[in-house]
Image 1 (cartoon, rainbow, N blue to C red):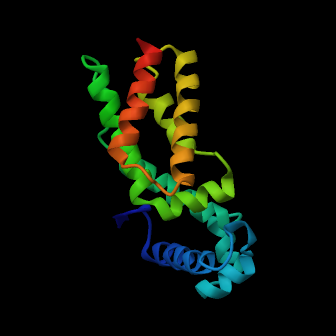
Image 2 (cartoon, rainbow, N blue to C red):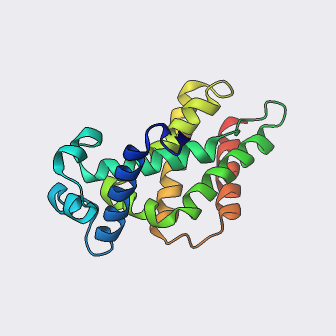
Length: 176
């Protein structure tokens, strides 16, 4: 069976779904880093041994969600070599929508991981490395991470299109 977890059996899918649902329920009343494995397993109706087959900490479930959201958002996205401004804007807009549409998860992820928006940095390292000098890519990804983190902290008070334009302008000023 192919699905959100790739080729896995139904029991694994059911277990991971139960753990995600339990994590979502528990994080409504406490921070992710304060949720114990024992409490999570009780809520999900699974034993600790099963939990440890797939994860080390409850936060790993959240990271897996972020990774899946990132992969879905980045499917089919690539920079357009002939028109950097169009390619970069399209890429950034897709990224902004990924964060905006999953704002609840992103807020919790930022809360539990500080400014660790690795999806943004992976995006630049993967997609932009052939179009930008390497030192610019690292510098630019840091700026993009900071802007997106601030946008998340401000409860997404600007539209994804507005943030994508700000980020595109920022990037283009640095590469042109």
